[in-house]
Image (cartoon, rainbow, N blue to C red; front, side):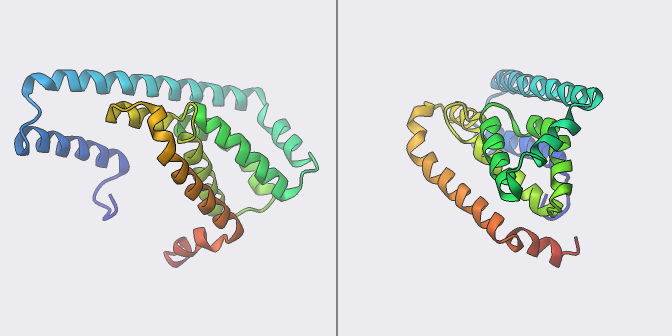
Length: 197
């Protein structure tokens, strides 16, 4: 994917076939009869995620159609919190929402709301996108619900409670990175600028 050979979706398909090849041919730990169970579990997990994403898409479309987004964005901008107060509010909001929803759903629902706020404060879209991604990623690994952590624990076959000790350090480092990117925007903007974006 980094070399430009595949799109992210194509890279996922290639990774699946690579995993099957390694499991069935190289290590011989996956038998042909195990394939149906593996595909069934993958289908169930994908169905749950796609159901949430489709409902989030419908919800986002409803918000746009009903004209809810502009009044809410104006209320946030005119709340008197100031630029950094609004940014702190968005950090808390998106980390909290990230605990409950997957990343795609959050982007579908919140990006139409956040774009007017971004434009009002003249934030760089690349910088704001990096901050938004970091906020969502933090929420995805923050207990008690932590969607990504839950999936990782299920795949690894461990209880979520046993991961809290080492996840805390990861969350702290991600939070420090987010604060550094907010304080020094060039951390997020230097490479895209060098590449001509």
